[in-house]
Image (cartoon, rainbow, N blue to C red; front, side, top):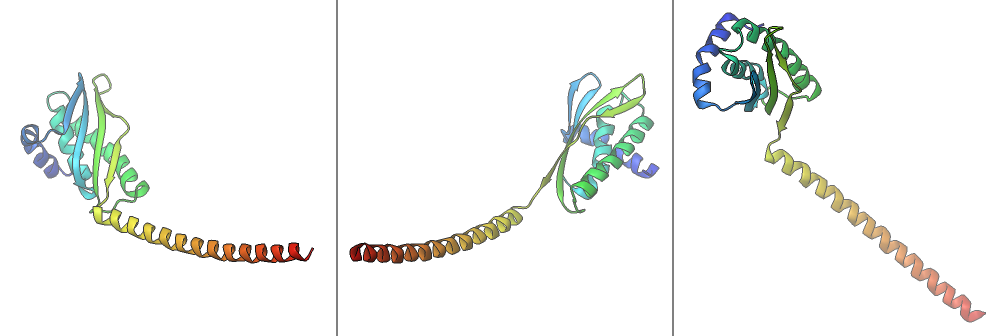
Length: 166
């Protein structure tokens, strides 16, 4: 759970976030799209809490925001760590639509879009390895093709020889 100290720290940064960070887009009354920007996976819970506090301050009670974001962060943990296999230092970006339901006093989170960003060096290494394997396979196939050609030429010569004998 979130400690009171973390929540107070996040609330203190809300005004800073509103002015410096454009991680919130108002889509309709009491409906926003929250965006974390690119962050280390280990920081997703803090970032979602801060952005939600900034987005819903004045619309939803603080305890509702904290409660619902905490529950949602548990679901995100399952997705990010267990299903996607992200490590603490992996870079991710999360976009999520959130609606504040006044009747039920709940934040309703939509389906999150989570992007895992892969370093260029990892992509380069993967494709270099893949290209090497394909080149090796191509060389092997060319050798097999040459061997098959020689066999066919030998058969052709033998057929021509047999045709002359007949």
